[in-house]
Length: 295
Image (cartoon, rainbow, N blue to C red; front, top):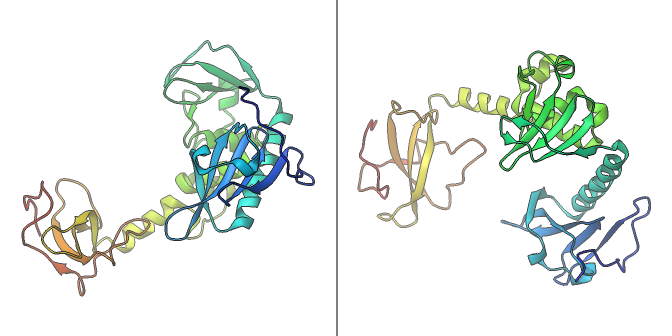
């Protein structure tokens, strides 16, 4: 049986050849971009997320939830789904125009032996290994990286540091990749981003800056570091908290009981309200609780 997709019965999207939208056999929105498959699937609490698949060899109307295995973030609504699919289509079109080329692997990297190399331009290579991957810049290319972000060995791993390469050599990346790179650096390297762009990131624009602000604002509050449903008090969650959410061995710990329906962890942790959440010194549901450093 061929693994090539079956041609769509739906009309292609105007202005986006090779892109088709439709409904699955289960009624959720789906789309095909070349060999890529996308779906808007329901998640928790009435939310939706973008699911991905590859080379589904049937018409869109026969697709099922089991065909999708990737999770690419939350979606607000169907309009957001359409926008992300079209963004991926534009990304693929721009990527083809960049004419990146693959060459035989022949190098050692910090992540092991390179198994696959994609050349973006002279002196700019992406290496894939059995465990990880990232970019390798030649000395001539590496010197062009902003000094606050430059890696001495010229290697930039694929989780976050790849964004440094994409921002430095923006003309070698698609618009989608450039936007992802900017978002990554704002989140994880805000100081360097602000120095490079001479801007100041506002609250909500950087994960690291927001965490710093949270830690400063709640340095003296009890912040939960561990929680589980209480075996001794039905309907309650037993939590262990430390001042500012510290997790070192010297931090004094305190237990509290929080109503289970109320316990919902925020972006950086759950803050104990001393006026409403009772300090608890009774039998614990934590097998490892010994009361060490109890406050």
